[in-house]
Amino acid sequence: MSQSRRNSIFVIQPYWYADTWVFDDASVGLEKEPFVAGVPEMIDALLDRSGIPIADARRGFRLLFSPAPFPDHSASFVRTREELGGTWYRTDVESVTPPMEGWLCPALFKYFPEAPPAIYVKPEPLRR
Image (tube, rainbow, N blue to C red):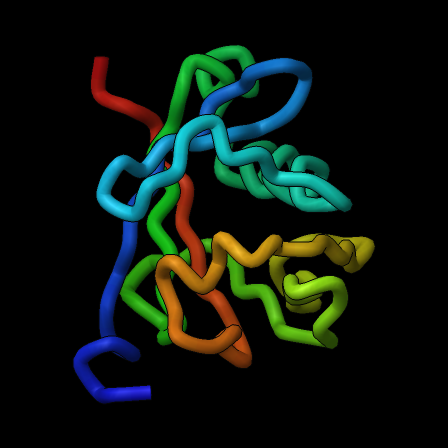
């Protein structure tokens, strides 16, 4: 992975739709891309830990993410294995207890040429 790509911080705006977290990103051709297989529960735990009320977050929140640590990141997720074209990640021990695991679908490769060993994240409320 190139140095410039590794240091990138991306931002998406997840919101609640059809009983799960989804996001849109026209820049990579995604609309209502759902989080599945354990990731919705991981998002709920991340929001709870951050103090962002779920009711507010369901209308949308910012989620910054990067394959490299960045100042004030809230959690990191460690790659565990690949399956069905996607990648499983587990929470780090300090982020969420008990540890959780979730699957990120191949949409991950819209942001990274390969599944990074870790993903660092930070949720932020939207300024309304």
